[in-house]
Image (cartoon, rainbow, N blue to C red):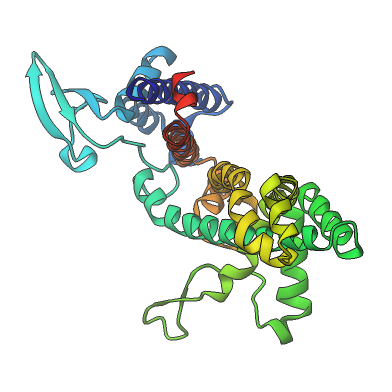
Length: 358
């Protein structure tokens, strides 16, 4: 089991390195000068030279990549020479010096995601720290809705197998998997936030926190969570419904279920007491994968509903070409996705020793 865990962690680290390479090459080979993006249109040649030297933009691409990895690595190396890109600034890196050799200082620090081009040099880590919790709340709410409703609808399909209700649920599930999230978001926002607003009292757009009319503070507006959570949960809801129905039908064909039927137990009681628990394994498997993808899938949903999460921040950064924010956000999402999948694999290996020995 220990070797299995090390292999999974090793594969995860290699995957993360590949993500770093792709992100760096993708955004550094794009047309445009990052220094000009930072300074705007009124820059001078002297200002451009200073910014390029400060952020390492004047160095070869290979050197820039090594500097990028050095920023992201918890154990990194920094020059003691003031003015060099890798000069250790305590306020910027919040690093703990370990040991020095020559003009280089080895430090232990949190990964440094650099600074925003468009937010007056605000650290990207601060931008992500402010928006990621909102995205996490939205993702958890969406997956909870998908789990509860999906299991309920799957059980209903089995209870009314091959009847009108079963066919209707299958039709809705198919539509839920095929309709893009951004289209569902626009449709739900217009219908429930505009057309039926008098009855639903929901807003077309709005984030988790709102400022009161007097500007004296922020308060939580939970109703703004409802529509984006439902829209984001539609696709996993459809998958959970289908998986629950198929798994439950397979479980219902087992011998111990036939024995329970022979004893005269009702179908609803058999499902509730005997079949439901044994049918949840594929559902849990699907949900673990969907939860990781919720973070990436929230981009358009957050933007359409005005939910101030990491997804909306990515879209805003794309509109303003704020490359450090885009690179940092994509890297954080990829890291979370890898971590969640490693945890799920380790849980599977613990539950089924055959997997860890294979």
